[in-house]
Length: 237
Image 1 (cartoon, helix red, strand yellow):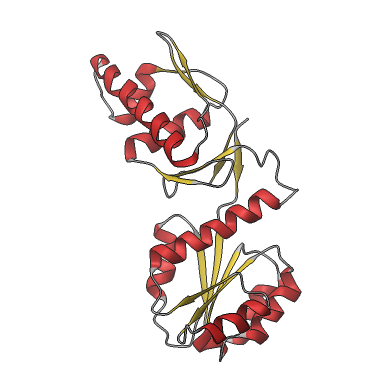
Image 2 (cartoon, rainbow, N blue to C red):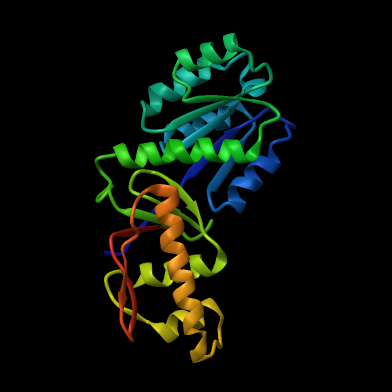
């Protein structure tokens, strides 16, 4: 069934006058919800109402390796949220101290945004798969905001624009056949009937890409002379 869920939410704590605006903008560009705080009072107010999947803590803001703040986050959230600590000094001793008090990961600043996104994503997938309150955790998940498909085992597949539009249409009609011309128009508005070959190629390549990257078969079914249908998927929007 079609199941809208909440998207990954990130809280970023940085030093006043810090340079992490690009980090917040990057998360938002990738389709995540992201909020930044620059004072301890505001941060603790945010943390009073558990609302974040991942907390990114800048050690410059926290002081040292931020052990005290990490401990407070764990006291409020337990292990229902991920904690990533960004370190100016990324040496083993600093990383070990932060992880001993509950950090999930430590990255050295200046941080590589692609690496940070990958770490946040894997933490979120772990939480999603281990959270017993989320139904059908074995289902596929589609993130239309960032054009990402996640397999039941947590593997992430970045989709092209055409692939993303096709998956979005099939997910919105989960379990029902979407006719070929509808999908052709979605891929390229005003597409001619002869574009049906392009649709078949997109679906075929998508199946192969998903199988190659995740080891799982995507449940797109072909209905001859009618269209395609998709089942067992959650839309995270």
